[in-house]
Image (cartoon, rainbow, N blue to C red; front, side, top):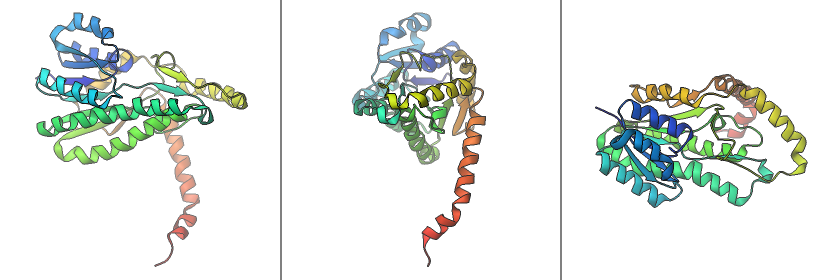
Amino acid sequence: MSTTWFITGAARGFGREWAVAALERGDQVAATARDSAALVDLVAAYGDLLLPQRLDVTDRAAAFAAVRAAREHFGRLDVIVNNAGYGQFGMIEEISESAARDRLDANFFGALWVTQAALPILREQGSGHILQVSSISGVCAFPHSGMYAASKWALEGFSQSLAQEVAPFGIKVTLIEPAAYATDFGGSSGRTATPNPAYSELLAHVRRARRQRHGTLGDPAATRAAVLRLVDAAEPPLRVFLGDGPLAVTSAEYRTRLETWRAWEPLSVEAHGKD
């Protein structure tokens, strides 16, 4: 029996790669994009296996309608992929109110609305797998991408709680945390705040560190098989990295956190007070 997917942000990047991976093995895919014209070639290639839909995930009513239409069309939904979103670069002081709200609307609330829309369907089926596309920035925050990290940390928090809430219904949740890939994350899919000259020296350092940290960019097409393995796994992980490098960065981050918390534990215990 084929698997039925609902994928947001399927016009490009990971969303498109995973839609193609699913379609090539005969799965059914409801693919959404802000501009459904970007999905025309997939319709031509895969025919009735694909249901293209125009969707702006920041519109809660539209997200619910799209999920409902996909279920009505295919009869069920098995895998929900919340991939829609985009990057935001800029120091925290540089981020405008509109940029902050836009990032949370797309990267956090969009995933929340689609998740809420899908949950009644998955609960009724007694099965399902929700894939939340987070980032290494969802577990480690870096300068010049704090607003993006904030949106992903919010996604991480609600998804970890969600996993515990829906496990009794046979629903699984996985946070996918990619490293740097050769997508247009830093191009047309990203936004950059107007720079403040006060941060020019720091920005130069951040860019050097980013180049050193990321090294060679990953190939988005190489993630296809990995995501299919996740979907097919009987016991998929709550969190998984994609790419070479995130584990080392995150391990160093958590070692520092634990060392700091242990060093300050006497203060923590003192702050508890006495019985």
